[in-house]
Length: 242
Ligand code: G3P
Ligand code: MG
Image (cartoon, rainbow, N blue to C red; front, side, top):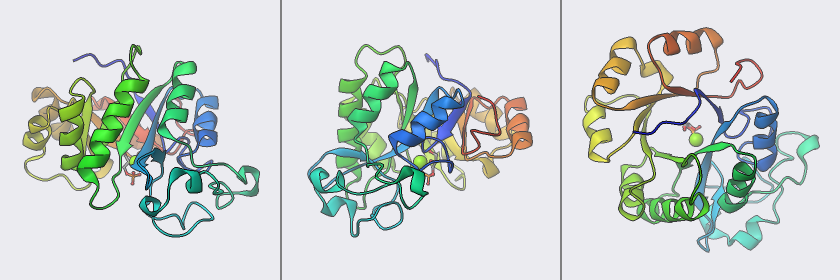
């Protein structure tokens, strides 16, 4: 399949250098010449898609409680930057729409990780895929939709089969290839510790690209690319050149 993506993808925008999953982080990643960005997307209580890793607000905002328990209007008032450092005080939780428009305007690419709140897997997968289709209509490179949730990816496939999918794994199960192929995935997205030369070769034989996360060691990145890895997700945007 068409694979217009770069080898290096910035994790949560710019890894740990800026508050994860904010537009400020993506801008910082872009300042290091990264051209593709992974970020986590879930539904606010009123169905708006927002960038947020955790199901709850405490770690990365000055709010409290569940993301799904708040309408976007409430989330938009939170400070999602101060927890990281004073320079980012007041940085808001962005919507998928806002981030998509900024990326497209700047000719940059996206890996949308669908990160459903518990119990909202299919709903989140379908909503993210429909919104991605709408926002990236006519774009040069479609966003890759990835998820640890097979249910979310199945729902995404049902509503927008043309968007490329990647199934995420922590530890690789025996049947990783069958699970990826059953979802019509373009890629296997695996924790880097489970990736070996034979695994990458087997994925390629199965017609799958391979994305590794989260690779922060330049020597490990070089080894993985030596085995034919297609792309990796990194926090080390300042250490590993895109
Ligand atoms: O998409 C790769 C990586 O982001 C998965 O783990 O927890 O950082 O979302 P996490
Ligand atoms: Mg992620």
